[in-house]
Structures are given as structure tokens and as C-alpha cells.
Picture 1 (tube, one colour):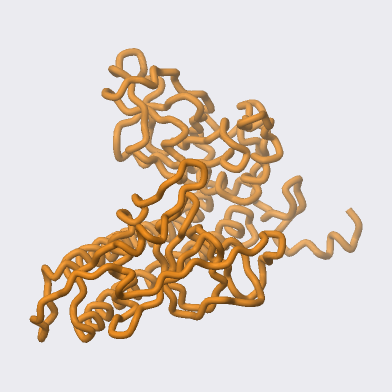
Picture 2 (picture 1 turned 90 degrees about the vertical axis):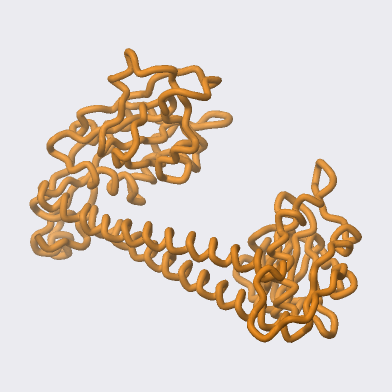
Length: 399
């Protein structure tokens, strides 16, 4: 090591195979820190009742999803595979993009360790939650890509290769503090996710009652009229653009049959505050409200409210019937929704003033959901930043 490199090392830090880490930290092989690293039991996937057992889909979201498990007929002879609180499931056989995904078992429900997932159990030198958070770092996720052996449809990581991965190991008391700090963010994210679920359910209930006149707002009593969409709005199909001319950083999104933009352009053909419905593709029937100018593509319908019709009311009515609109799709190769079928949809329509009042109530509910989603994104960004600093020693916790 030359003198210039030495001068760049902060006081209290040292150079290791993993880079610069705190002086009192160690670099160890993952295998030396595990009391168990094993494949799960093989079971009959046709069994639909019994004791839950994990499978790849169980951790597809990064958490243990008890709605996506397999079953074993009874517990006899399987005790070795019963999961313990703090065990970590590791996806070592999967597509290359999904390989290395992990889930932490909180011990909340009985479950057994099934095939195609490794079970990692920390020994006494390693805090269980610290191991979990370490496996979520970008470095470990990158290492999973490096050591994975690609195949035609999936990649795999051997237990021997995984055990040879090196990680930075602080003293046990610091491990626990790091896990505690990151756990605070996880708890906040979970709490925010539950709030979003409640807000979405509340808004759904409001939509179903207000748009069916089961709940009338104060001051309104006039009867509603049943009208077809093509009588209250103009439906227009967009213009297709070649995907080769799309950009990733231009100003205006291209809405073309999906839930997210297909790309971006520097020109637009649809004004802000316009209702869109996906015309074709796997997401056909998806209803959205664009608050910025955009390019309406060949697989996109725009809905323009006619005089006497509140566009936000029409958007809410369409969104409330989104599942039914999606059921109108035809075709097997590239499913699509015909403009005539969309135009024949019937809705109960109140007078303009009541439309506006209902739209305002539901728009406020949407705004509350958007704010809550913005908050959870912020929390996730904060946690991501901490994940790259705390388990690497770039930022230290106060013991």
C-alpha cells in the first residue's frame, strides 16, 4: 500500500478485501457464520391441504406470503424442516433477475422449509436480522448475479459458492444496533402500507355507494339518468409511433396500452387532465387520468367529456367499473377492447352539480392515497440509503 492510499483511509478504518471498513470489524466467509445452510424437503405439489411448506412463490414479494405455499400431509418425520424464528429463505434457483431474493421468518405462523429455497440460519456470532439486512445490500445482490450459474430458463447458486461469499461483520452489539435501526424503517414502511390499504378500501366503498346513488350527498335529491358513454363523452383512439423513436428522458410520456409509459417524446397529442383507457395488450381496460400532456398511442383511448358532464366524475365512474371494462377484451394473440363495446357502457348520471360534488369527494380520497404512497416511497428511499451505509460501515450507529 503506497503512502497516498494510506492517507486516504479515515481514522479508525482499515483496508480489506471488501474495501475500507471500521477497524474493529472483520471480514468472514458467510459459511463460517451459519449454523444451517440447507435445501428444503421435496413434497407432492398436488396436495392442497395439510401443513404449509414454502415454495419459490412464497417469497416472490420479498416477504413470506402464506397464500402461496405448498402442503405436506402431516408433520411426521419432517421436524428437521420446521422453520425457526429468524430463519432466512434464500432464492438460489430462479430467473437471473430474481435470484438472491430473501425473506425473513418472524415465527408468526407454523411453516416448513420446502424445495427450491435455501434456509439460512445464523450462528451465535451473527445477529439474525443483521444477516437478513446484509443479504439485502447491493453488494450481496451483485454477488448473487456473479456466482449464479445461468441456464436456459433459470439460474442457480450452489451452497458451496454461497458459503464462500465474504461479508463485513461488526461486533455483535453493533450488529444488533444496525438491525434495530433498519427495523424501525421496516416497521414504518409496514405501518404506511397498512394505512394505504385502509385508504384504498375506504375510497372503494365511497365509489360503490356514491356512484350507485346509495349514498346521496347533502342538498341533492333529483333522479339520475342512465346514459351510454358515447352519449356523454367522445372516445378517440391514439396515434401509433415507432418504438425506435422513443426516448427514456424526453418530456412527454407515451401512453400506449400499458399501466406505465412505453417511453417518452418531445411532442404530445393529448392535453393534460385527460382520461385514458388502455385499448390493447395485457393491461387493456386499465383506466387512468393523465394530469400532464402526453402522447396517446395506437393502443390508447382518450375520453373527452361532452358539455354538461364533469370529466372527473366520468373518470371515477370508469375506474369503478375497471374490472368490467377489462372483461370486454377480445382476441387471443393481442387482446383488445373494441370502441363500440366501450361506447355502449351504461352509467347512471346525476345533474352536473351533483357530478361535481361526487367527483370532489372521490378526488380528495385519491389525493390522500397519493400522499400516503409518496410517504412510503420516501421511507423506502431512506431505508435504501441506510442499507448501503450501515451494513458496510460507511455510516456508524451510536452504541
